[in-house]
Length: 195
Image (cartoon, rainbow, N blue to C red; front, side):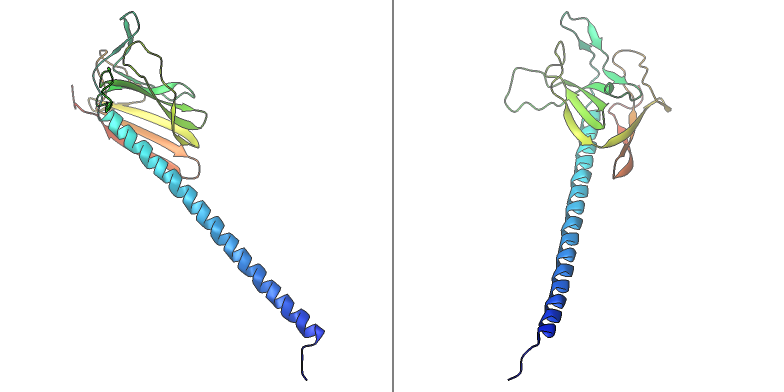
């Protein structure tokens, strides 16, 4: 009767162990790759949502300054400055705020964008006049830098200086760097053209 020797059995088990280890390493590497791709796609999706929200907001600008509780002017129709961490760099009144519940409020809303730590945030106000802002909505995190420019009468500027309280630019150029994704530049047109 023929059989396997102990040395042959040990060699077979050793080869089987090597193949099993290699298979586990390949499987782990594949799962890590899938996870990295899934995370990157989720961040790119957030970036696209941010772009769509900015486009919708800037496309609905309303030439309407805001007032405080006493009725005195508190914010111009459009506010734009260089980016400072935690402070709004972009703020404006926008039309088209949907009201499916028919709540007693206007369809015009004031929104602000700011960079807080490494998060790009959107802040909206529940009423256009005389209210505190709502909780910030984090659009995308990992933002390492933001630059902004405003086009008015053919000239680009880094700070918006309105002629009057109801004035706003023809276009807004926004550039930001996102950790792990790189730099992105977007150009947003506003309604109205040259005024």
